[in-house]
Length: 94
Image (cartoon, rainbow, N blue to C red; front, side):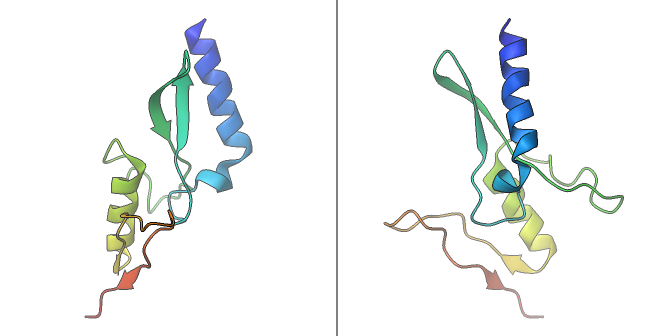
């Protein structure tokens, strides 16, 4: 029964994947809940032949996002300010 409930939550994520896109620095993870408690988080990602497998290195969305942006030469700081808005991205100059 619990697996059906979790599966339904994942279907909801599939229907609104852009809201939870790991490449969007303003997107939040989708929180999986069971019995009113958070048991995990998931995010969406557009998979291609070039990036298949790079999105699931860490168990938390923010760590995967940091790694993803670093691969693009962008330093992303997931820390939030007092207004709950992510800090701006900083580009690495080489």
